Amino acid sequence: MRTAHGKQPADEIKLHWLLLGQLLTWLGSSFIWPFTSVYLHDHLGVSLALVGVVLLFNCVANMIGSFISGWCYDHMDPYVLLIVGAALDAAVLFGMALNHSWPLYWLWMTLTGFLGGWNGALINSIATSIKSKPGRYVFNMIYFAQNVGVVCGTLAVGYLYDYSVTLLFVIAGLLFVGVCVNAIINYRPMIQFHKERLANKGESKKKSFEPMPKYNLIMSIGFFVTIAVIWLMYMNWESNLSVYMVSLGIPFHLYSLLWTINAGIIVIVQAILSRFTIFKSLFRQILFGTLMFAISFVTLIFAKDFAHFALSMVILTLGEATAMPSIPTYVNDLSPDSSKGKYQGLTLSASSIGRALGPLFGGLIIEDFGYIQFFAVAAIGIFLLLVMLIPMHAKLQKKLKLFPELSN
Image (cartoon, rainbow, N blue to C red; front, side, top):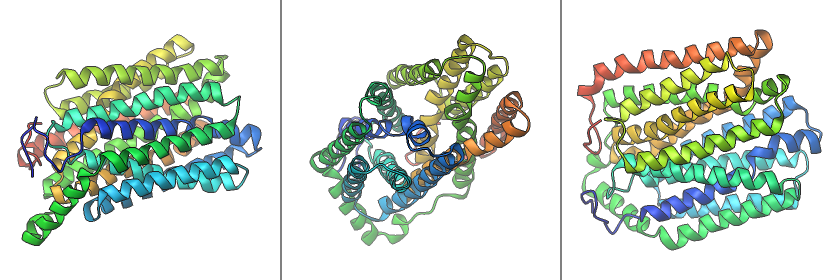
């Protein structure tokens, strides 16, 4: 049974348990991805080109996992799906602890990518079932928990990596055991939620399988393109920019410090957004975040020392903290109840496409033209997203049907 904001229905999990699952998931993930490139290249002797292929497989698998998981959420019991996904992720990580040699590491990374997408899409989809709190608040808190996990995870890896890689895999596996146990104990209301969905299908098949309205779909596609392009450019901060900074004589540890700054600012901004209404609408928040992404790449054109790179990162992070949680929130409002999981999965899949192709896209432009030219291409590309979104939303706004009926 659905209730007004502020009341906790029996078929709804408590938000803090969902946030704990998100926190543990990203803690576990953050024990793996920061050191993968260095470990493969420096310890296993894998070429940088092949490392890029491994990361591509990881991202593509993540995209596939997100899509399949989103579909499964709409048709199967989310309680079972998340428990199975978390348990399998823990098993893979324990397998990595036992044997992290090449080329088995490639297989492990592909599997963790798939399961990361699987679990991520499920948590986002389960978040859509929470009706006792506004959707914007729920997704802001989900993103907040994610970045607390990233902050703690990446800081811990910096100290534990030199001590033992095996220990990192074991800790990550234990964290996903925690995700599994948390789900088993605290996600049981999803069983009732799924039973009610099945009952609704029996009572009204037409209502249960309500398709996304035409104009909602067009607007959602605009958001999918936006998040894919942003990640296409953003991924070069995680890959090619480190080489550029080192070439300018900036120590690698200062590049790593940028990510601590990134995660810290996200935590602060999300804490503010979860308590105060800064933007009058979700769409304005998305526009602001997209604009910040574009400006950050403009400032990179002139960055030659750490202070300027730090400034660019601050601007980039303001964009990330505002746009990234707002897009899945708006897509949720545009999605009928019968297909919310599907479109959350597609949102994550769009992100994964950008993540997968970003380093290759940036690398090709940098190799042929140079870093400054890439920064210009990235800035122009993201500015063009604004040129697309603003008139699209202005034309479609009055034709959009929102689920639930909230003001945007």
